[in-house]
Image (tube, rainbow, N blue to C red; front, side, top):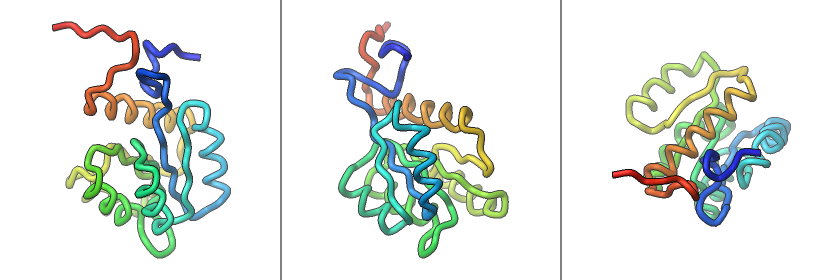
Length: 150
């Protein structure tokens, strides 16, 4: 277990950052929950509409979403979330066939990062942790015990 000094997923009063995972496949939601629950407070949503509802209820710091979902794409959902909370870190999981949409989303600063399918769990964990560190830095929150030098 990493200490608070080096672990960006925990800060000040040892509160875990909230990660909202959105996908329309139940098995993917379960697998990603197992992957991230030790490092983050995980909230899941089955599809874009439920994702928007959970976002409004939970106001997560991080969002991990699939691109291709019934009814609403991940980019459409993330765009709506970004308008409400621009500081939220948004990460998209996508297949190669969606790359043009992803490029547009990156160019419009809608995404922090994107991950292509199939993903490597260790790499995905590092990307989400990097997003957590970025969120904390941009919010002016430092992990407990970190020294600030001027």
